[in-house]
Length: 565
Image (cartoon, rainbow, N blue to C red):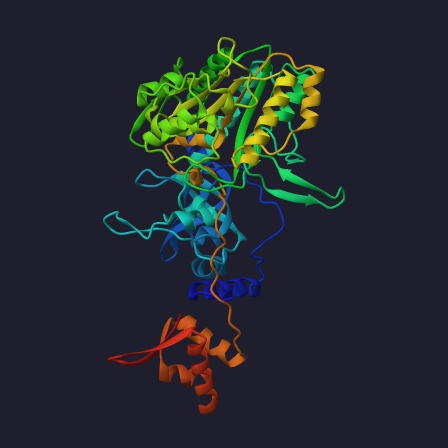
């Protein structure tokens, strides 16, 4: 393991603390009774408090020092005075432990009293402190110059996502996104519970990946000796519960789709699905807009949200337009009563790339996606989808070519999808069989499995039902003005981290490299002297380090110097 100079120094400090009889990682509870937030809200002069957190900055001035402590609620100023902490003759705790052996990033516990500085800053006067955890790696803290300009901010997206733990410490505003995310889930859950609906859990490992058209992750169950699939949706299981007699069920489900990644897609994502018996898609539209109005207000205190250059208003009611009318409006082409061949030719004429494997539904979806979808900025319901696009959806009551389905569009992206659910088991079987034919034809988005158990459940009878799915990650993106899904996931999926190739070093090479690392840059002659090696061993060692590309020798006007790579 290659250590930076600072990491080497911190490990040396760790050893010194232990030599003083101080455990840098104590096991016992620390009795915290206040936070930075509660101190500021309930401030009283001379009040005793016990706080804990990370040391984030300090200004040492001889026997006194101001520092900042960061906890889960924010930051508070703390004041270290040597004579307050070390009341006897022994000043080791301040002079050595605090001044020399503590570092930015260390966790400490403090017992002290509150006071206000001359400039009005609410501060904790430290009476006692205890090291709770020694940080061995320096935090990537930004640097601020005398004019208030910030440099070296920790803002590289890839580093931030890989090291979210560091991101949350040095960029506290990031935490707000995740606080709002939790507020969204809580608001939605309370809305459903108040409506009388029941939260459930369904399997993540499924024998058949059903409920959506998506490529699943596959695994193998050794004991049963069968393939299992990470769920792509929970729809078919929730409908089984409606068959079983629940009037309304919902689930926040982790779903997994083995597909591409971009700014709006992660292979692991969170969806909410709800199913309510004796309802239809018209009722669900009303329910959906009331739900989102409630959630937006709970998260942001208002129905309005900013997303990029757009101002969105989630206040109900929302515009409603059929898919047919939408395509007609933006392309001039009417999909009504058109054959697959006619729609394919129309798509080609619009400059849309089509394949022979695409069925009628897929072609219509491509036209809508290319020409219409991006135009809907304010929340808009797109309704009445062609039957070919919706194999789990009830046939439209007025037009057998259509289904009773809507999608909610915001800023050109779908955030909700809902149906009057298909509950005719014969029709459902035929739809599944049609999907198999599309899959055989080469449509990679068609369902390749028939869930016979689900069909059996429908045969027992499912009441008229309306269901809706909402992409929670995408919704919170809109509510927090984040253009990338990675910003609203604590730990988004990443490519494997590129690691520096490991090289084997002998004892002499390790010893010389340690000297170089500590010095950062060192005169070649001085390095040879410090190494204490014979001429023959020295030549072999320095050549070995340069050949293995862990150190390099460079020539300057001042002479030959060695530095670590």
